[in-house]
Amino acid sequence: MRLLLATHSSNSEYNAECDYAILDLTKELARAILKRIVLVSKLKKDDPDLCRMSFWDYSARFIACGTIEDEDFMEGFDDRVELPEGFDTNTSWFKQQRTDMDRMFVDEDSVYWESIPKHTDIYVETRALPVDLIRQVAEM
Image (cartoon, rainbow, N blue to C red; front, side, top):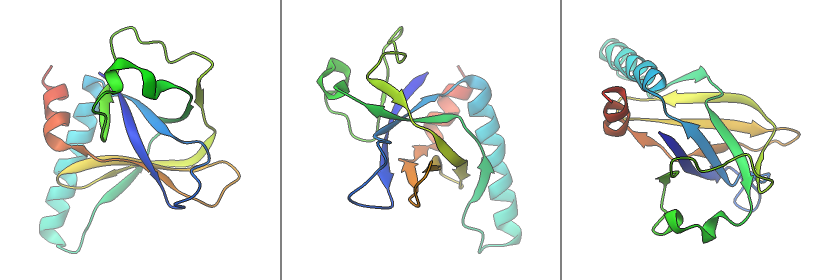
């Protein structure tokens, strides 16, 4: 499942052209995320102050995006949309941004990705994916 995820910047006026993130949510990635969610749950029993855990991860590709808002599948877009089968993200108007310190954040209920665009001091993060969606993909 290839998802287009909404992003949010730590700077309300600048996102370093990290307009969206593309995530190839494979069965293998979904299973790895679920293992991490279980780990967070176990550790939280021992230490209730644990909020979430982060892992180095470059699964989400932060992109600048031209006119994708005009695509039919974007109708009703809120936090995420599944890209249609065969949708080409290697076009000139899908530009992958250079990022550093890419991490996956996992808590008991969801997962999201955060990154620092190169040569900036801001953070850009995706909207969270709920654990139910991750389970659905893991069971495909």
